[in-house]
Image (cartoon, rainbow, N blue to C red):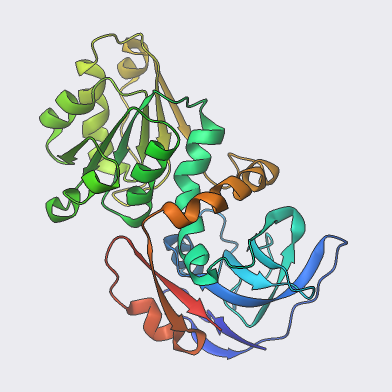
Length: 312
């Protein structure tokens, strides 16, 4: 079958032929792939930098897809661990990692939004006991997943949502997506004044911006004993921070991550139906491209709020 193929880390995948995978277990089914999103998680897996990478080449990239099962069902599914990816004509779907979509669902729209939306949805639903009426700060709100995080926080009942990002031009549209306030990420003083008393921080940046924002927010809190859950999701600004021990003693701060390994597969799959129902109401523009143009797709510039989707 035809597929995208990574032959060398650091180079875009090429288009070629690979053996067709075979469904093995009782829950597995071979599906015709209709659409597979080109997510940052796909890119990091394809260049070997993701923490789950085993370094084995060649590989078929892709972490999720929408496909058609032999019986005609439309499925959104997450790729099997250690198996071929989803950027191919066919892939194996495990029904325990899949959700049946309505017959009229748009495969390209679902493939574009489910993965980036999952990051904040799982964080708020599975990593903390977020309740309606709480408040959320999104660090990195001008990126694709961050824009969705603003919308999802509001959908899950947040009474106040603050979006922080580097690109001032991209901050203004966040108000129409549900943000009550927006702040430049490097304006630490204003960030602290605007978001000091939030209940949850969804952190897509980490690195130096978090290193500066965390102490500023904690010192500005009116009641430092009020719980603050800081959820580390992405690290676009750096993989590490320096964390003074005094911060953990001087405030009721809980640091936790949300990603593969921190939530069980069963826990993630349990959230897929409700997230799939929410997808049509979320603003994420899908940009479909043919699978045989995967090399061009890899280097194509994409604005925040848009996601390339490869279509076999």
